[in-house]
Image (cartoon, rainbow, N blue to C red; front, side, top):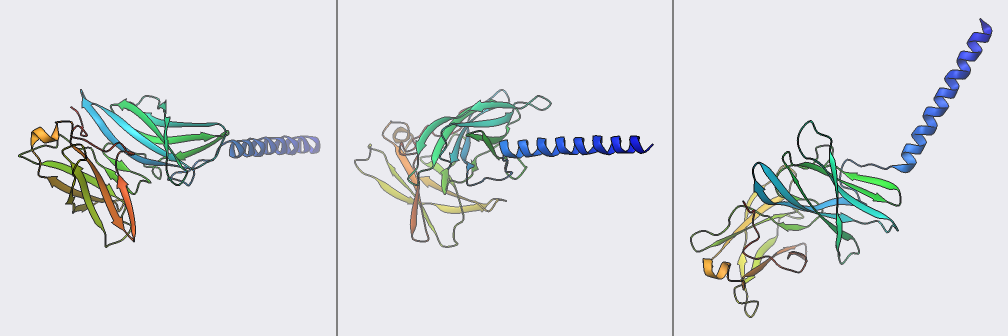
Length: 249
C-alpha cells in the first residue's frame, strides 16, 4: 500500500508539472485582451455594400508595436454555427504619432467580428470587451469618423453623419466641402444628434447642394472636430470623401 501511495503522489506531481509548463508556454506565446489595447485596436469600420442578406465591411485597424514580423487579421463569423474565419488586413498608412493603420474587407451574413494581431509571435486581441463588434458603423480608437449611411442625397441637400469620441462637453464640429475641386470651399456646422451606449456621439449636417454638384466629381468634403484646444480631421486619410461615400445596395 505504501508503495502505491508513493507512486500515486509521483504521478500527480508529474501531471501538475506538465500542466504548469503547458500554461507557461501558452502565456509566453499568446497575450490576449478583451478590449482594445495599446498594441492593437479597431480604428473604425463601416458597411460599404449590402445585398441578398450579406454585408461587406471595410475595417481599419490601428497597431502600435514596433515588431519585425506583424500580421493583422479580422476574425469574423460568416454565419452562425460555422467556424470563424480570418481575413488578413494589409498595411494602409502610418499616422503622425507613428502608429500603423491596416485595412481589411470582408463579407458575411452574421456580421460579427473581432481583431487579431500577431507581432513577433505574440498574439493580441480586440474583441470589444468580449462582446465582439457587430453590424453598423463602428468607431474604435479614431477621434472622429465619417459614417456611411444609406443614399444621402434628398431634396437639394446632402446628409453627412459623424461619430466622435466625447473628449469634452464643449466642442465644435463642422464639415468643410467644395463643389469645384477646392478652388473654393465652405464650412457647415454639424449638430449633435445622439449619444451611443459606449459614450460616443453622433453628429449630423445637411449640405445645401444640388444633385448635379453632389455627383459631378468636383464635390468633396472632410469633417473637423475641435475640442480641448486641438483639431481632429476625418478626411478619408487625406483622400477626402465624395458623393459616393454611402452604403451601396
